Image: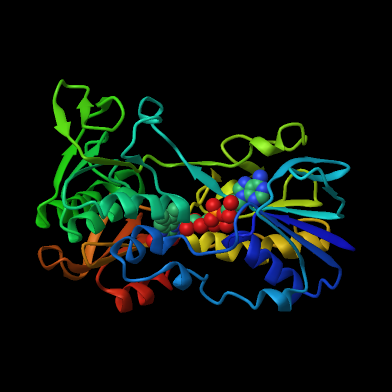
Length: 378
Ligand SMILES: Cc1cc2nc3c(=O)[nH]c(=O)nc-3n(C[C@H](O)[C@H](O)[C@H](O)COP(=O)(O)OP(=O)(O)OC[C@H]3O[C@@H](n4cnc5c(N)ncnc54)[C@H](O)[C@@H]3O)c2cc1C
């Protein structure tokens, strides 16, 4: 293999480049990225709180970019992938023997609110800068739509900044699909503890305001005043540019358990990849930092080997920081949940999930050490 083109230069793309060099690839490496590399998790946490600045957003263990000996095409989008190479928006084409798709995801938007000022999503540094600027206008009523991880973290940051915050969640229990209803309810309880109003089981029907948002209208007829709205309603994979590539795309680039597409010269890693998860027996997009970080080594090994010789078989792990507490989860949530350390009332505890007495998952709140120990048993 003489040339590899990596599309997307954030976490998954950068790690893939590092792995290519670490695994002995000495050929031409072309890095194509719409944005320069930076780390996203702080955007909904310390960056909003003003504890870290743009200069502090380097990825953990970010390599010396010069040492990668790559050609950088930053600030340029890839527009297509064909047998002839990757076409870029500046009209050039990069012809390669191997391709890494690492274009991640973008925030889902609420169509009705697209043109209203004061309505935000949070995925990129530009999004975070715009949100931070709007929040700096002074204490006001913030409505966060979606009590998933991003929504909960934004709610937490807004509250700490002194805003009055309401969180609207369509499901009866926040995060239940990820950590199960029991632990989801514990996470949901963190909002009330910090005087944030959590409204569950209710859908958003529309928005008040003409130029700038003034309220959020609920399907049950209620209307919540809002100076600022943040929609944390999920992310969709960036795959439009692959139309016509012949690659299978369905809520992500479809890859096998080694992150390889049907074409062994093309791999997909990180949030854009919908990989066959051996532990769950179905295809998933992980959408978590650690998965994007770890998939790269597996995918690159397979790309260099020319076929799938190794598999990504790690238990999903993620963390979230809300209201000064660290939440950690790994594995799969089941109905059999047991508190094994601490107690829920103190908000410092570890819970384990079981199926037929076998450990399937671990959840922890402010208990990193026992979490790490138990996670090893998964
Ligand atoms: C606000 C926020 C907070 C988060 N917090 C946590 C957390 O606490 N814990 C956790 O586990 N995970 C967290 N995550 C998730 C984690 O950041 C992602 O899983 C990770 O960023 C995925 O990396 P990626 O490289 O696959 O995708 P991305 O980070 O989305 O990067 C994709 C890159 O591709 C570029 N790109 C897209 N299209 C093109 C194109 N056509 N041509 C060229 N370049 C293109 C994009 O500009 C981007 O730079 C958070 C995410 C966000 C947004």
